[in-house]
Length: 110
Length: 117
Image (cartoon, rainbow over all chains, first blue to last red):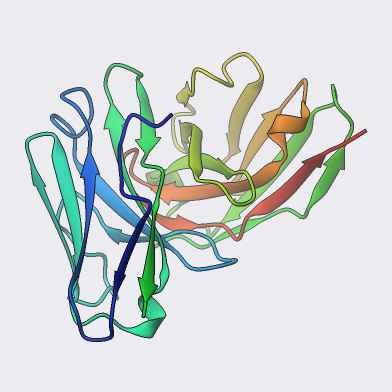
């Protein structure tokens, strides 16, 4: 059981906006920054958002992140077929003194 | 962004140890923390711990504490993760990742470790 909660799946048609939620607690999201990773089938994870809302170089601005209280969200606008992947939120947890990942959300492009 | 290349797949017997290596591009190695993450096939990501490439300070996950050892060799810009007393539940793809301690912008390609009798 992860200390971070994500919906198992999210879907949208090409061009739509999809939002993925990540719920945590005061020991993780409530006091530490959130990152988001995209994992395409058969590939290593890729960082798409760090420090709650920052995008690494090369990540399209269709990806955006936000954090409020003990929750965070990742939004993908202008959904494209190549966005079909698993997305994981993550944050440091002060109680566990370790890094925790959410269970992952599979994004399906219909 | 550091480039990370991992060692090849391993098959081990229960009770044995495995050592996975992760070679980093040279000039940025000392500035990074190297984190190890594993993924059981079909399941999510699990953080195993991290090590400061420059200082060698480590922080291990509670569920592998006592079985895992992470090291770095700055002369070869290589990080290593050794896991001992292997059980079948340790069968997974093991990734090294570089970056800060709370976000990782570089990932190795993954190393499959199979524990089977």
